Amino acid sequence: MLRALVGRLAVLVILAAASPNAGAAFTCEVYDGENCIRWLEGQATVKSFLGNPGQVLINGTITWDQNTFLAAGDWNTISGGLRYNVTTEGELRDPCTTPGPCPGTGAAGENPVIFRSSVCGGGSFGPDVIAQTVSCFRRDNGAIVNAPVFFNQNVGWNAYDGNLISGATDIRRVLLHELGHVAGLGHPDDAGQNMLAIMNRRISSLDRPQQDDIDGMRSIYTGGQPPPPVTTSGGGGCNVAPAQSSGALGLALLALPLALLGGRRWLLGDRCLRSGRPGWVPLRGRDCR
Amino acid sequence: MAYRICRTHTASGRLAAVSAFLLAWALVHSANAMVVVERDFPDLVERAETIVAGTVAEVRNAQKDSGAPITLVTVSDLSVLKGGARESITLEFYGGVSGEYAVRVPDMPTFAPGERVVLFIAGNGENVCPLVGVWQGSFRVRFDEALGTDVVTTNGGTPIAGIVGNKVRRVENVGDGGGAAAALTLDEFRQRIADELASPSH
Image 1 (cartoon, rainbow over the protein chains, first blue to last red):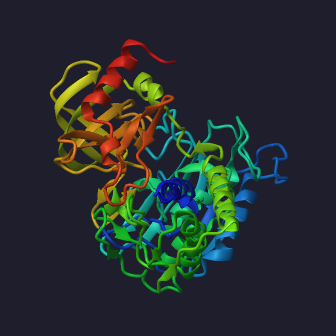
Image 2 (cartoon, rainbow over the protein chains, first blue to last red):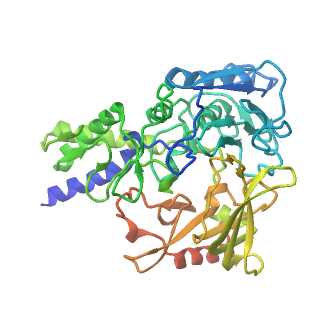
C-alpha cells in the first residue's frame, strides 16, 4: 500500500518535472478562433537590415544579418512547407511609412528585420520589450501579408550559442524565435504548458528549434496544404493538437519509467494524454487562454 | 494509435525513472531570459503606475494619429489598488483590426467584455503595451466553485499557486482541474499587493 502510494507520488513529481519534453503543444496565431495564419505561397522574403555591430560577435559572425541567415536556415532545414528567402540587398522601405494593407507594417510581402526604439507609431518598446514581430493578415482566410520584426536598439546584443550570458542578449536565438512568429507560430507556454521549445516566450539556453517547434511548423505548412483540423478534447475546454509520430514516441519513452515506477497502466493516446489526476493534456490554440 | 505500457517492477526500471527525472529537472531549471524582460512580483508592484481590479466593459478598435491600429480596452467597476481613485480606465494596446486585415502582436494580451482582471499598468498611451512586463502584468479572475471564492490566474488562464521567493508561481498540470484547491484567491492576491506597497521587497 505504502509502496504503491510512494510510487504514484513519485510519478506525479516526475510528470510535473518531465512534461516539457513530451507531447505536441505548439500553438499558432489564429484568424478565426481555430485555424492558423500562414503564408499561402509557402515562402516568405525576409529583408535583414540589422547592419554591422562593429566587432566580431561571440559566435564568429561579423554582421547581425549573418545571424538572420543562420536563423532562417535553421527553419528552412526542418520546416518543409515554408521557405524563408533572406536578403540584405535592395532598399529598406520603412515599414512605418510605406503604404500597405495594414497601416504601420509596410508593403505586402516585405518583412524587414530592423533595429528601432519604437514600433511604428504604436508606442515605444518601453523598458520591458526587447524584440517584437507585428503580423498583418487577412481576416477571412488567415493569409499573412507581412510581418516586420523590430529589435529594440537599446538592448545589449551579441550572438552566441549555448547558455545565456548575463548582459549580452543572443540575437541569433531571438531571431529564430521571431522568425517563428513570422511563420505564424505562437507561444506553447502561453496556456501554462511546460514544453521545451524555442517558441516559448521565455527564452532559455535552447538555441535551436526543438521537436515541438518542428511539429508546429510542419503542422501549419504541410506541403502547402491547410493545417490539420483542430479537435476538441473534453478536458479543460481546450483544443488538442494532432499527434505527431515522433511526439507519440517521446510520450512512450517518457511513460516507460513512469509505468515501471508507479506500477499503473498508462494509456498514451494520439489526441490527449490522460494519466489520472492531475490530468495532463497537450494543448493548442488561443482557446486555451 | 495508442501505446499501452504494463506494470513491471525492476531495479533498472527505477534507475531509469530516476535518471529521467534528474534529466528533466535539469532541463526545466535551465537559465531563463525573455524576449520580454522578466518581472518578478515586487517589480510589477513597483513599476506599475496604477494597479486596478475590475471588469472589462468594452473592447474596440481604433487608430492612433500615426495611423497605427490599436485596441482600446475599457475596464470599469474598478477597485484601485495603486494610484488615484477613478471609476474606469481605458488602455491602449498596439494591434487591432483595420478593414479586411488584422494586425496582431503575438505577445499582446487580449480581452473580452465581461472578463474580470487585475492589471499592473504603466506607460498607457506611450508604450506598445500599457502593462508592466506585457502579459506578466495581466491577471484574470474567475469564480472557483470548489473553493466558493474568486481565484486569480495568469494572463493565460493558469491558476496561481502563490508568490514564492518574489516569483508568481503557477499551479502546474491542471488540465482536468486538479490543483484548483491550491489557487491563490483574489483576496489573498490583493493583500499581497497591499503588503508589497506597504513594505517593498526591493
